Length: 113
Image (cartoon, one colour):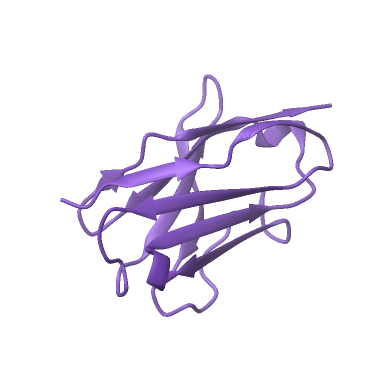
């Protein structure tokens, strides 16, 4: 089964940017990848998708215009570029392969005010 590993999280200040990566252990050439986040005490919410076609996917209203999902299939990697980060973006961020309901282990993003 394909495994996913997220990286790129960290502690930043409001207004900063981060780029998260989700690396798959196998080819994801024709597979959609989704990004979720879970804030402390909250549920896990879908925030963005990276369609295999490379076309623009879904963005939650809370991140639309600030976050961009993209992919590099040759590297089996999906990215989430996060700009103008806000304290309310503080959460664990996860990628998911819907085809097999596979989740990564998550990477933590903390945004200070």
